[in-house]
Image (cartoon, rainbow, N blue to C red):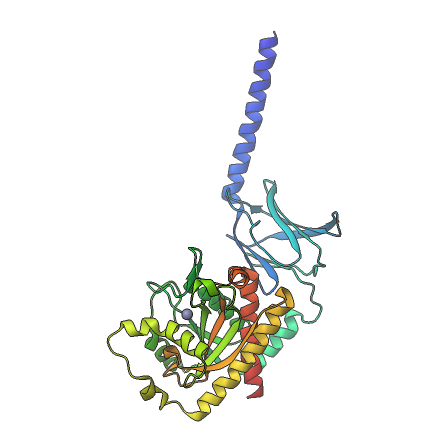
Amino acid sequence: MEKTILNKTITSKYLISLFLLLFFSNSLFAGNNFVKSTISKGELNLYFTSDIERVTYFTLPDSDGVTKYVYDIYGGVLPSGKGISKHSFRNIESFRMGQNSPTKLRVIIRSKQKFSPNHLYVGNRLTIPLIHDGKTSSKTKKSVKSSRKAYTVVIDAGHGGKDNGASCGKVKIEKKVVFSVSSKLKKRLEDDGFKVYMTREDDTFVPLPSRTEFANKKKADIFISIHANAAPKKSLDSTFEGIEIYYLSPAKTDRAKDAAAKENAVMFEGKDFYTTNEYLSLISREKIIESHKLGLDISKMMLSNVRNSFGKVSDGGVKPANFWVLVGAQMPAVLVETGYITHPEEGDNLMNSYYKSLLAKGIAEGVERYLKNK
Ligand SMILES: [Zn+2]
């Protein structure tokens, strides 16, 4: 008797789980799978395989002044192994994403900061603002966009392919850091109505002269080469830090000469290179002045953006240097050293997605400031 009951229980349990499994796997096929999440410009973006039907939102108070922001994405499905707990963002305590029901995906963000309630879902993307910003609505932004002449910017993500650039350990690699900053900058400038091209779209090697040639061909108004620096030796890792901007002109300071030597290293692998003097004699005085002005605006806006959120970030100044990658550019051109990858704190910052977003935002605002005052 006892045995029969037990068997019955097992059978019904088995049937229920089978039913749930079928129901759930069915929803995997029919559902809208979560693809990835990104943070840029203070917004969390969640991407899905198809259009989002409906999102509801509510808040719950948590301990220590933390609020839970809860978003339910109807039709949303979290494929196994996908999560979004790895984002770091100021004042965000944690992100969690889970399957609340077979047809509802729940995102819980715990934060001490007041969020703007204006989350937005368009197509397959849900955007959640992580900063409360009452100033600009997307409507007013759009009207500014359409009234401005489309400037063209060429972004040059330094190094690539066989050329790693500077590195610190196995993870902190310049070509990766600068590609990430460059991609964020591209998106940012495009959102602001610029026409943007990148000298490399992936991890490929592009010779230095081809980079400015490309900018000339695209008739760019501005050329920005993005790099990250490294201390000259291990014992100086904690000494060297800060954002430095270079424009093409005969190098004066030792640090500018060091940086130029490092960034130019790959150029000299090739057979034909010209002497610095030959090239430098071709740069017009006016281009030097304009590049210097552009550098000053970029430096100012980068520093104000990162310092707002990350406190102390060292100002390495705006300096003349003879970088080969700037040689031959027919437009104002600067090389941005986003920071020292070898510095304990700055190196960590350069691995932080939000920090890189702020660097990109600063460069974009610098470009806009320069063009406005031109
Ligand atoms: Zn570099």
